[in-house]
Image (cartoon, rainbow, N blue to C red; front, side):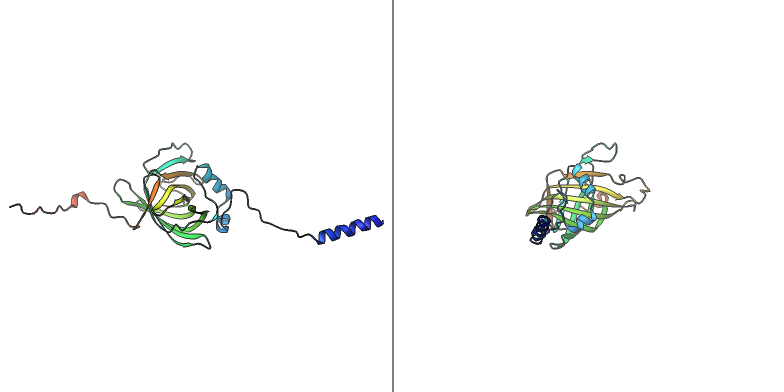
Length: 233
């Protein structure tokens, strides 16, 4: 009986001298801000990685505010059923990133889709929530976009991710994905199925920093005025 009492007393003394630590352990490969952890399911990030696009983790991304030209845009992979990989033929993109908050790791992003042949704007998108991750000069932007096609007025809601390395003159190795969240019924059959996606890259390997989000209107060849030649007499 005494031995049992001594054992219990020793156990109580040992526990009294210990501190129990409770830690929230994030899954490996999922080091992101609380907003990303809350809004983007791990399964969605896994789908992005399956498309071959790098997802840079961390909570110290660079300041990526600016306007960038992504051209020419080439498709690299697709999870759309039976879709062949046709690299070219997609619209170029122009991004405007602003209001970056280094504490909350958020920003605003607007996008224009531009016809590579004539320079006309064929679509616009306004970011409803842009969240940053990354470390050093490498970053990933998680963007929820409400899209409207100017030609038909149809809408879609997508999750897009942009990853690259920031330099003084632009973004090196820009890659992106588009995952369809909602096609609002797709009344004109224009969009990829919900929960499928495509991966893209800037095919020349560099997305230049530019000065203006606006793009000059394409020339009308029927209304081009040629200046008169000076009098040769």
